[in-house]
Length: 310
Image (cartoon, rainbow, N blue to C red; front, side):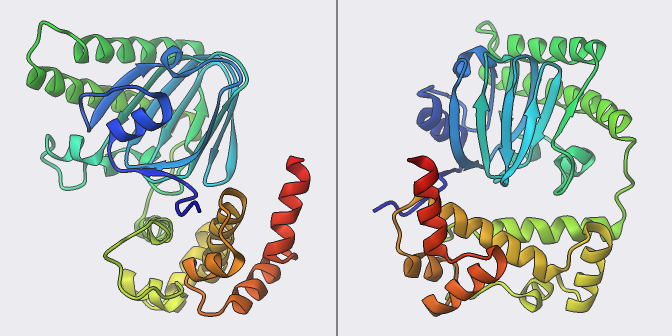
């Protein structure tokens, strides 16, 4: 019986080996041409990874699903992803360009800042992960990707020097991307309430990751989330409602249903087992909850999926 419906990879070599049969020597950084990652019609099922991603698609089309939301990829697409986002990819035709994957460890060990990724608005929770850019911007970024690739894979340099160069060239790339991103989206000022929204959404996402050290599991509630964020539950819901249009309870319910649907679609776990995994103390409570949000029972949802797949 499958016990982990959406695989998660906490280092780069494990991910590359599992998804692409690529042997990577560095666990924290890698850059690859998209041609190395499969051809037309390729489908990469949902997964989670510890890596940040910076990618440029110069040619090709398809769809990326991020936490269940579809985004259209076409020539001139720049996309940037946070760690642990649920990702899946469907390529309609051959993609060209580059993808960089790196962990927080790769950045923090070389930066003097305590939270260096906060410098880049596109890596903040809730930010737009994908934008379409102009040919001139594509050309500028593509040359930077090429330079990183060339220096990182230069056999005439010591490994330590190649990694340091990759880090500094990556920072230059991210700064250029930041300018383009802000110009494209007319930049948002990220105030303290927005930071609270980001921290809540990160908490919500991390809550469903397997944790062998977790204490006796309990269903995530608004009060528990507020306690972890050291604020009053009413204030949390008020801020979320103002900036996202949904209360804390709505966010928690929607995310729980998303995880439940993934388990139903991708595993052969029973409904009771899925309910227990999602911290429901009684299978009937899980069934009532699922139906209240989706309008159908978990069992009907699974049977509906089988019909569509037939």
